[in-house]
Length: 502
Image (cartoon, rainbow, N blue to C red; front, side, top):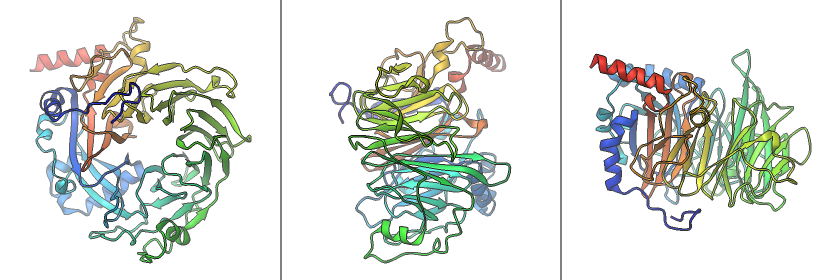
């Protein structure tokens, strides 16, 4: 694996170093962590929203194994989405809605949970704390998935169309499923791209007073530099009469089969973002976008960062050479709306102010540059609850957690904002030069394929991550110890309380 910054080989964590981390670091740095080996590679893991949490909770009440297990009944139920890619084998590609049982904060001994880790892929879904609620046979390998609204999920594969799935109405496809041609039929197909659109995908929806949603938007970018945005209202996803079908016509390509049988929706915006037709690798929707004003941030392989606004033609803002190499990921802060993130093959994470990006003619500089990772950045995500917290996942097998307040207020004399120094979950690399870095998760031994923050306010520091290994993938669900991200005064107070009660 090449280090895109130095050109040297990046040494992945050795088994010895991993074992040392598991035995000596996990018990003191994590409040909870589970790890399991999966039989197939995966590029997508997501926590569900409140509607999906309710859906999996209702399925548990009908499952006697859960009802009769007192330990599981005391834990929180979280919905999760996980995709498995089967490559050239006959096994079907799947998108699975999972029920994950998560211990509450300060309720378990981490050392005990480590003993239950599964290193055997055959045991991945046998343990009671992770269960398949619904399985969809996806027409092709799932590269990206995003929550849309309620029980709706959108997915990207290696072709031009974007699929919409209603996880409440879709039938559960039970094993065995040995034939890729027996694909599930999506509830809607978003058409408009003329080239493959494998990765760049973003969604946004505005909650309404009713149980429905309004102004649900989907943004997608393709390999030819074209951006498409669709608007989806509550009545646009009709009950699909073909959703329960098993399609077996092996003479027709999967993308053509599903397109023919599901509702087709055309985009409200189609824009050529890259003049050089460079691939769009990631997109992010402005958190207050509406059908009348859809604003999209795009990260491109021509090193440009762009913003398009549906109210005006062309690209509204552009930063040429925002990175030294391809830009792979971007995200828009849901709380501080002017703050943007980008990450690229140069291993850098950059923080931008959207108010001063300009139109591409000037020399726009980032607010801050973070150089912590030893290889290319693959994913960036702001925390949905804590406005100044984000995470970065890299090909170097590390997920870094950052808190902008940790640096900004460390020396200002404010008792509320003083925090403990950055902490690493392994012995290398050496201590960071960035005080914003508060934690490194080094539980994976291979490149980070995907990660997600839990959207629930009650558990906003809970994370899920998946790495693509040589022989499958590794799924981890983890929560760092609260002493790491709390204010220094609160942490000291808790430690004193523990000392008095010990």
